[in-house]
Image (cartoon, rainbow, N blue to C red):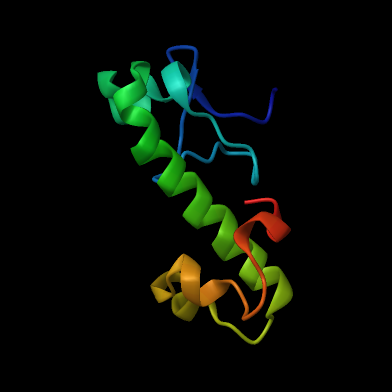
Length: 93
């Protein structure tokens, strides 16, 4: 917990809901200070879920495809990241 940057007691999150500890994501009310009051409601879940899933899928692609540069992976869609014949659920996404 000491490695998680906070502001006013809440985790400081990246644009992908990732905390200062890589691979640790916070959604819901914990995203209130970084993303605004909509995160307290169900209406904010689709926004949060799509951001987190896309970011996790990109990290999985980087791990599996070391030749994929960071800038190319950022431009890739989740569909381009998942290899042919694989499903997102086979990656845990």
